[in-house]
Length: 511
Image 1 (cartoon, rainbow, N blue to C red):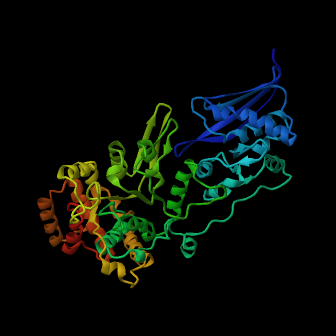
Image 2 (image 1 turned 120 degrees about the horizontal axis):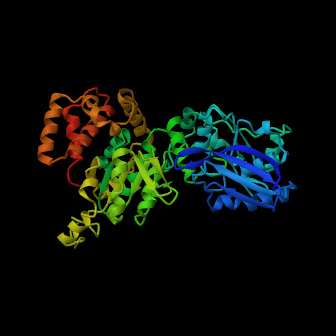
Image 3 (image 1 turned 60 degrees about the horizontal axis):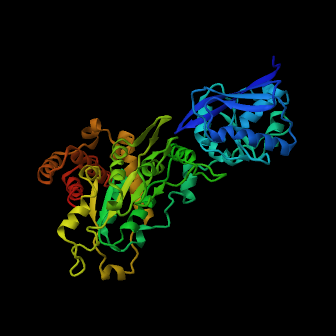
């Protein structure tokens, strides 16, 4: 009968979407045929950790006993993927062997991928894991690779430490050396002083010639978080206008920065050593993108472009060129601000509160209405526009025509209004909306919309006429009301008046 030698248990975690589940790494050593077996619904990357562990131990001169090593990852019905369990498995083996004192691992949650040379490599989902550890009363310390330390430092209530190598981790657990601590994070005010508000700050509104109506629409969209469709001929400035939008948005606050960083972390888009994302995301996928790429998916659910644009901008250039199924998949996240992905292996819910900016040409050739340039038949124009469905258009707050820029505007050397000046007005308008109902105007719950908007008698009368003459749906009415509220906020007005409704309804006509 095999003789039992020792056992140990180490706390770790597995990331499922943005959710984190506790994993107990149980290690048993018994005399028998030398082998290592990992059980507990471990996927291939986890099982391959056996070779990484043995190679790293040999490189560092750590003796892995020639015993039958059984590693159980509990709960057994939870799928485990990735290489983040390498470190806790190694610590469990050494603790069961007696090389590490058991008390050294009490209250410690460990994650990390081992390199063949004994180095520790970064893992996905470090920030969600750190937030989970901070909320778990059983966890007092979190061990991470050094490359994940700054990212995880946003979690409060847990001691975070790490190193670049397994050797230093073992020395620290034995009390011989200290662990590296994460660097301090910049405050929101510090981020603003350092000009770190947007990934697209290089695109300034002052560089865009002409287009006063489109610029006004951008300001309203930024202030209220409203979706926007720009339609115009090639070269009229649609893409440049869209890329200016992130620069009009206020900097991410701490809560928003944590949300954005967590999504990019589980997607594997965080560079080693990076901290909280300081810039609002700007995602501009190509029109050949799949449904899974835009919305998220895969056998192990991962966030798509819609979630990667959370608290930022999702720009869809050449909108009619996107696949019909791909565009229709956007309807739920636009309405609900989140994406639910259900697969046989599990489900995940990702936040997706983005501002949608889309651009399209008025016809297949792009020059509809230009004398002598457009020869598109009427049927071809109708087919082209029907690629974007009515239900999707109904979810877009503002439809804006972007005409060709005249020579006088191109030759005008006078600088236009800067993004910084517009951002100051936008920030004030967003602050008014936040004080009133705690969110942007585009996200006001329908049940609270009438009360929150505070429309006066003249504005209500004009809105009723607009609904009748423009044929607005109930959703279109609500979106026109939200845009009116944003225009009033930009002017610092308490009540929504007739002038605000008039401007808002002008953006609801045919584009």
